[in-house]
Length: 350
Ligand code: MG
Image (cartoon, rainbow, N blue to C red; front, side):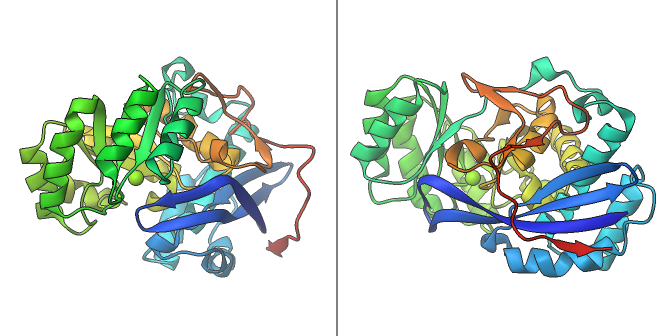
């Protein structure tokens, strides 16, 4: 199998501000894995918060490419080889390959990935649409506009004006609202804030406290009425046992866990601990979003809006209709490069 990597940028329609950062562009990498007549494609959307950058992905891929072997259907063996090569992290680099292998398998067998996995495309959830941090007035305006197309909104919090923001948005729309503090609050602040937010009819709260503050998660959950979902505190399969009993659910992201196969294992482990499951994303094109959407019939909540937030998505894949994820019927991931997408310089690793 040959592997080829190609960097590409995504531009955000509006600055993507969360509690700890503002992002204007995403620096992602397209990976193509070729086996005979078939080519599978995957995407890495590296996150500096989880220790990756485009440069680390491009540096890791040649080492991983050497471990692909010659049977693309042996995904479990290949995943074990990749993990043995680079033990820790590099999840985005690994998931780009894993995604490409699923795509390749589907194309070779002539079926969409969701069929390969035995999943019903009618069971995809409705994705939320994220309202990034801005002034309460600007966020309320954006929420009013977004709610015309998306029935579920996710509001980024972790500002000095959190209550004001949610009040303004609730006055602007009756959409389902979820909030995400991105680890910004102390446990005490979280309990006070969440108990005040409860009157605005909020569905759940994501990552109220610091990622490592597991005791804080438990304390918050025991002292508020809204469900708590762990995101930054739960990156991989190993984290599930640590957060179980301290939260109501987890947010799984391909770019944190390193593969569709790993994400499926996390979903089942979470179920064994009676946790709700959400499927989230980074700023990703329709390629990685469609890959995540393929397994979305297995989850309770989706936050797969990464491509919707960008203005130059080079791919067509999953469509979103009134928030509902509509999976493409093509073989593999069913993702096509848009005709208008210009090719950037590629790098080839045999
Ligand atoms: Mg989150």
